[in-house]
Image (cartoon, rainbow, N blue to C red; front, side, top):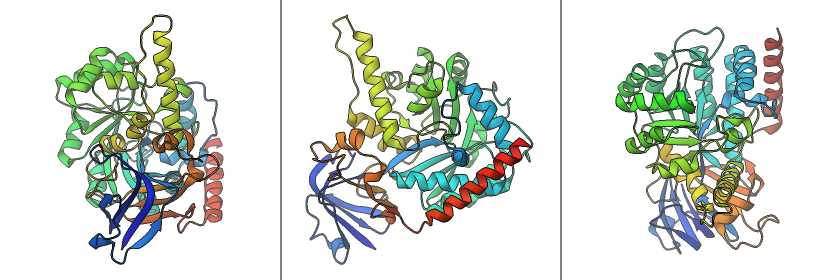
Length: 442
């Protein structure tokens, strides 16, 4: 099946292609075939379904580099959580042990559908409630069933009873999902301070990932203890582009030097850092850029935070520019401010690279998989269209996303998720939430 998206403002996020104020994107099967000002005479356009995108912005789908998808039944249940410790004790210690495999499925499916609805075509699910193999299977099945480009990052639970099948079960998961839309990664923590030594990244877990040929996502990278760990990982040869450090707040300059020198990737969660107050509470975008790292962005925990990438981009854009101007106030120094194109780059191309999928998605580049969104720029909150990148970052929101395509498959059309019974989904989500809370109370 071929589709020709024609007449829209195309934001490719490919530095070699740039933007086309009036352009076409041609999709054949799972891939982008061509991008140009007029592709109506392209050989692959013969017989293609033509999608008129006049008055729309066509861009790559957003990439979420870190979300704890299983928690989604409890979204915004603790909107004013005071700190990381309160989140850990309430969600991970009290509620997580009450989850059945079917609850993992419902929460992960809801997160993935919410991602698609908001234009996120790729989502890394940091699944750290894998109490049994069935729990892991349920999480992966939910990703597969939604059609999102999913990365299942598998980790042991922090607290409570479980089958102790991790990390050895990751080999089985990877063997079953080493290709296709859903792939597997190893999820770990930076240190043993929260959940003990088992999930703490180091030579043992690095060897697991290396033997399987998969990437590693390291959560809870904060402060002096994580800084010391990073220097140890550098010494042991455990850093590199296949490793992602999540949050990275409050790190020392030596740790940032090690991250930059080794090409290690970084995932920032702008609202999580600021709202929950992780270490310094300041998203480490300046530190990352100074080390030569262009970070990816992530949602993190929906129990306390927003679900969409528009919020992450705006939060990071505002916080960094505030910080830059404040640092130079009264000195006469010219502040170094990031741009809307920077944060859109973080939310697309750099997110894909952070997830190990830079050659697959993240930009509208011929040869890459066809993961794209169509945003209505004639809606009342976007009209008139003056700057497409500025509109995507500062103006648009999920209601403006008319079409979402993942690997050439339409997942949202006419502003509605394709093939999703939302009323039935709501029933399942509420029933799962109620069962979890009742079990936790017991």
